Image (cartoon, rainbow, N blue to C red):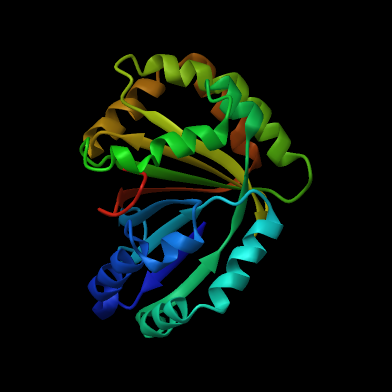
Length: 236
């Protein structure tokens, strides 16, 4: 996951340049077959922020991709063009919370993301609203495994409370590089208001409320952002 904050006066120019590079025929697509999504923060964070999501099989694949990019003139041109537009840039690596995802009915995390990023679906349904939820847990080896166990227990209750099926769990996982002991959830909703409907319904799910109660003492910070996919984002 790569998070960029633009200088306000360069925001639109960056989005236009990124569309050229990350659109279906863009230069970065040939390097990044694992490009999954590109979102623009709408509320809950810096409105000049954009988020890129990529998948790599392992660290070796990531290094090989970056090595090829560093020797490509088109990529070099994109990098030079966009560098003055960027105020800050953060790169983090997350691993899937397999047990919690499986409890939510997602037995193959990568296949779920690939399905949601299927380019044939772009333009076939209205772009959704995504919620990125981030938990910062206390220091130690045990908080992340404990949280995953609790999520596996509580998530089915939360999902059942969403009787209309408005919320779609895209992914959840924990940080491997970057701020450690971070846990993230990525959900898709048809609209901003549907996100509120799902949240209100979850408050009546007893097992989910109990799960949050057990997690809360480990959590030092909780952040939620609503983000919209760019028109060229595979995940819509």
